[in-house]
Picture 1 (cartoon, rainbow, N blue to C red):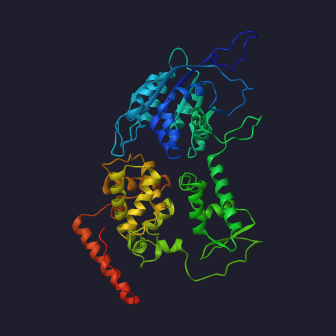
Picture 2 (cartoon, rainbow, N blue to C red):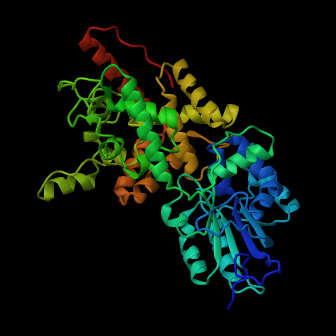
Picture 3 (cartoon, rainbow, N blue to C red):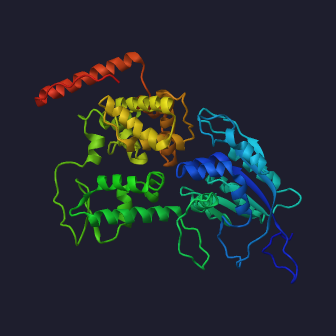
Length: 499
């Protein structure tokens, strides 16, 4: 069977037939991806689908993974469907419930996919796969399937489409798995889409040097790795002395952002220190014992070993800091049994494992519960705007003399949102804590660390708010502990703070 394709061999003097294209859009996947990077681009994507759809059909958004000899195909869209959650979510006027009419006016068939789980998962990806499978046998034959989603769950359908000799185009964000992008004939990168959305709205975009060669999509992890290493090199070379690894990690996260650091698990290396050890230039050195430092061979002297542990270790093992996790007291009953009944080294405690896998803030149970309460109050009163919510939550902490790092709040909010939670004025400390806990469980599962029921109960104890009687007991214990520490150090006893 000959495939209808504008790139196929043609008789001289005849116009190539249009490539029959089917377009399937997972609205929430694309919108959330854009929203975490650029609110303007996300809003323009949701409210003006005519502009970017026309550019997509004209070949102005995608990068081809193969050389078609410079031929730009003519496309005819014979099916266009957009899938999204029709339930109203907070006050975001660009969410699917508000903008579905824009897609209808642009000629799309709107497929409503209401939530199926407590985490508001709507099953749109399953609906899309089923519809694509049906259209494989459609008459006339569909030449090309466009999947506007960065979800690697579509890998099986891409394999099926390739086996049926169909062309494919997908959307690829920074977090999109290489196993997904490698199967597509063309890719719409997040950068290309954001750039077009700004340009089509008359906003200035950053100009790049023209290139005559066709650009092949790069591995997002390689891009993240390059940016991280460049930033580390710049910081260390600009310093007049060795730089602590913890300070480096914090500075890089603040400069590059969570999307390229935490979300990529440090460019696929899992830990910041592992990334540096494997990718940093040989001009730089890393200490293998505390305090963990990075220095330039020619610019700095090797730091002397010290007995004082670094803050990164302190955050896990220092029991006197009431706002940080005391790992040794968080062993589950399963772990305690294993350590006594089995030969060999004692397994690492649960919390230490989770901190290493997820890189979540190493905060105490009491501190997390205070933080969720502050976040819920801020969202209820002022709505949810990512950076503003984080900054205002930190300010609320200062008002009650609770030290809150805005970066910690951003890390928590980002994980809650990435897990599929839509923030709204009805959020409370419990709903936020549960969404964060579920995100941590999923992140552990992605790292092949599946938590037992007992371990998940430990997470409940760590994150979820307690009832009023337990709260009063915790407040009393905190007050007694602080006064005892003050008495031992000779400092005046601190006043109790109501939270």
